Image 1 (cartoon, one colour):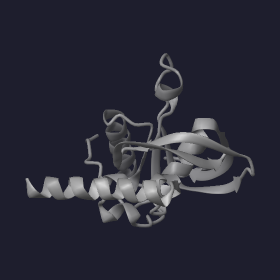
Image 2: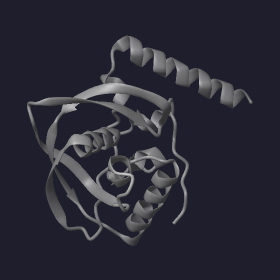
Image 3: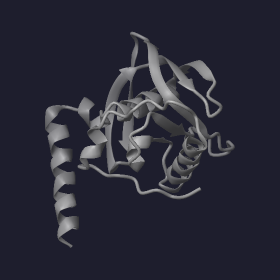
Length: 175
């Protein structure tokens, strides 16, 4: 396992649509391990492959730490995840993103979704998600499609955060 760098806005790779994974290989399993280690270190509850500069349809997640301080880690890996059903009912969560550090915004999404994915053995699954799980899986699948949570904010808020991160990137490049 190895820590990987998380790419930060305004990196254009965050807008790339990630490619499907053709087969679950040892390299994909290593990537999943690296992503989990990177996610825990950050710390975060979800991470998409593109956030570590791997434009592949893979997501890691662990909601145990967020929902209950006493719960044991529950690392999960979703390969080629896709939303196959959405509820009409919506919910609002305050979202953040490891690629947009220290910025949070309220995002409205379907309250429940059904997600189809492969596990690390290449076995297909379908699962219903609600609450934080539904929000997180939608957020991470958006990453795989080149969509960021700030895209759901008002134009004014989105422009403000994009400008802030562009200025920070210019300052960092000048140093």
